Length: 122
Image (cartoon, rainbow, N blue to C red; front, top):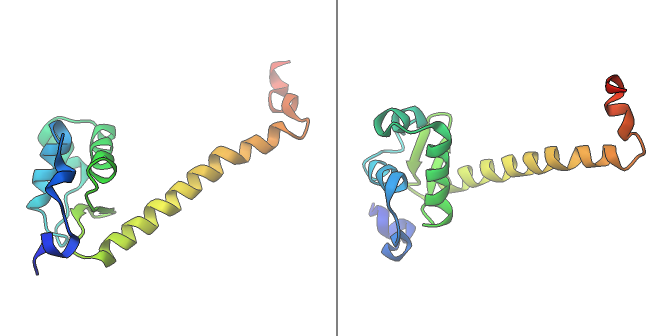
């Protein structure tokens, strides 16, 4: 199977790729979905923090349109659309949970009970 043909990867998407996202990209090119790389691997290899690794992965997905899959086993390039669809479903589920967590406390402030939240301060 020709990986690049299968996912229609374009070099145009890689314009401006440098720094940690570039290093992670080159590592992921050599990474099989059967042996994904954990964040800790990148953190140790590039002396980066976990948040920096996650941001680099986000840049690869968003800015450079690369199908970087993730899960409990680590990061890898999607070998086919089914792998990407699983990661996409997981990302969308997480986004919905974050949106819910951000919006639910809003309801508290619209029912006239704002003061009861900080009863111990008064």
